[in-house]
Image (tube, rainbow, N blue to C red; front, side, top):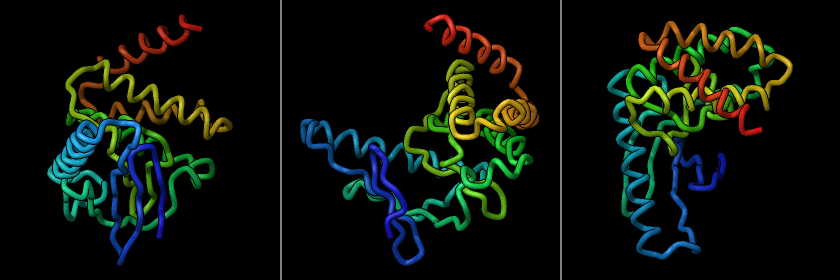
Length: 195
């Protein structure tokens, strides 16, 4: 069963597990394409291992195959947070707290949207294909800024209160929140000045 397709990968559910296959890009030179896909598959697998070490709610990595460019992951059952967010105001603070935990462990998600979160027994984050490790406040601030934009776009009616709750949760999850929030203000000013 196909669960989704992004620019980088096709995600399917087979025999109760999730398969994430990085797809070949014909517009890239075959050697460059293979190298990029292998590097990204390994990087994402390493991130899933790091998430497991810090006991973060994300799918467990069951297997990594960098020849087939495939990750085999635990299936998390539940609705996407996108589909329940507007009627569950308490989710915003929990999302913020979990983003704070990621950032406290120097993990930048890179694609923080409510479509990449599943409400199971708690909120699980999925799709770490654009994720990377960074100690920079700038990278973490950009991650938060992208989440803010995603919330404004997909959840316009509840956006303002929701993002305030996200930041309140973030402060709980990340002891180094102050530097990131200050940097977020600078990132947002840059964005406004470009308009």
